Image 1 (cartoon, rainbow, N blue to C red):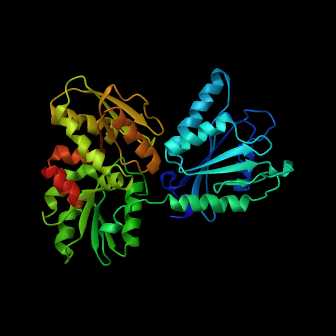
Image 2 (image 1 turned 90 degrees about the vertical axis):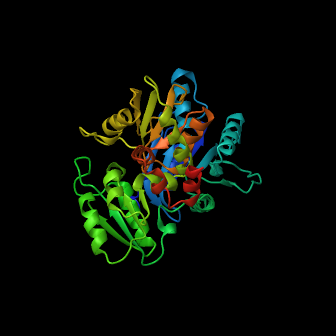
Image 3 (image 1 turned 90 degrees about the horizontal axis):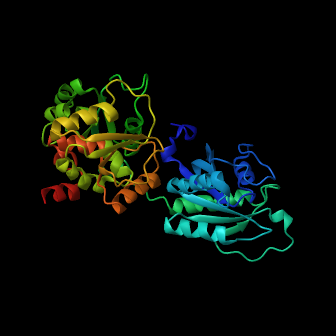
Length: 401
């Protein structure tokens, strides 16, 4: 996978914030070297967040987000400001753009407090420095730039890259559980929901992570697993399956071989696994009419037997013997008020970045609503959850307790 093909969930999200006419859009254009955002002397030209996926050296693959001015006014302006605040949910690095001629004001100070509250590293940029005669001393995270002349734009990229590296503490998908020369068997059903000519993103990412661990990935369909394990001649380190075929794969995988799923590994990768394992217990207390939110991070075309909107609701009704009320959300949609829901069931979130996933779990925790994950839920309903998290000993111990 090239850097230009890197999915948005794996890109460093750089949010550009500030007041109207501070030069946010001009700065975006200067950083990218392209005229992506409309630039005008009229305040409030940017009416919705503008996003651009690209590679910026020395950072690597990034998603740049140019936001409307935080000081926008009127009813429409308030909606634009709310969009700006929503952008903070996914922002890994914030760039606060200040007009060097005016300096910071209360709106900028409010943004800095928001960044701090959300743990978002920030670079403060005094733009239009070519128009000021005197440059006051700056703090460590501040710098003067000119989007018009290009002054200090390369230095800004370097400063953003340093902030990104300091914030990069992501786990691996599976590589840290493997040793060189290990075998891993991946079970990948090819059904109507599978995209033509390619594997779905979590499968691609897992294969890549296995190869980076100097291990070997063997990919089979669910009805090939038993024979493959018999013919391998070597015990695999683990079997990783699509959660939809958990029952068959569990039956065909000897008990001494660890078993887990792509969805469970993605939950761990995004930092939500422990909460999701704890949250699945709420399923056993579901009653008729309880609202269950099923949330997916992508907006794929739904097939007639779609996992999120068809299979999961059917399996939940069969398992619980109840008739809950299902509500569905996809892509960037996620309700701010979760109080109506008895349970939130989330996909593996391969299309969302870690900050967005952590935001969703944090909001649910603050509102007292349990959250679980597609794979964990299915394993729980199949009675094999402990086995499927046994590669993470602390979770298996919790389930014993």
